[in-house]
Image (cartoon, rainbow, N blue to C red; front, side, top):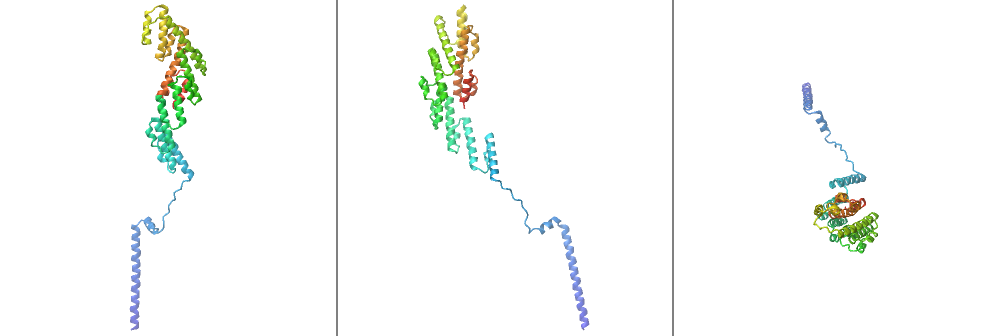
Length: 332
């Protein structure tokens, strides 16, 4: 009996071992099939799923680098007139950029409403003052100077209008209110020039500090005195325009015709702002006086127009180089 039982147990153990081996074979076959279907990269990915992935840390900018980037953006915005939003790190610099661009636009357009958009109080006040100064000099209206808050700018505004336009100058003492010494002397020279020419006063010309202007004043007075004497001697009919006078000269004869034409060409030089008419004058002395006198008148005309219209191109038509330079520097 025992031998029979031993045989049966041995067979059972044998069968169990066979089953285990068969099960292992099935397991490895199924695993090989799975590996064929799943790519090796996927298998590797799954085996590492619990491991953290490596990341690259972004480099933080230093304060100097941030400042340099903002300064570059600020300078570029000033050059192009836009791009203040590119200033990323310095809020004060970004606002200064917006304020500066608004200031420049307001002055270029002479539009005081744009000044209101400026945040910085000092720049806003300066914006208004500069626009009122520009408008006052363009229109030669001293009432606009009164709107200026800055006392120095207000004084300069009134001084320039007084010196360049001559409005309100009735005596030399009127020029003494001008603080700027250069403008004060210009005012005095212009007054003595105009007053001497109007009153045929050669002594008044000696008070002019500018030597060239003094010589022109003396020549102008001498020429006007000569013209006055000629007009007393000759009973020449007065016409409305120099053109009409010139046409009437053909009805005269001899020296009277020449004198008539000389006087007409003298006046046409100023009327047409063209000194070539002086060259048509046959009397050499009168011709020189024409060039000198009408040069002063033409210069004065274009200076006043340039300041009133704030147009530098009109300064280029001024014949005197020093006065032309003064005209250009006085216009902002």
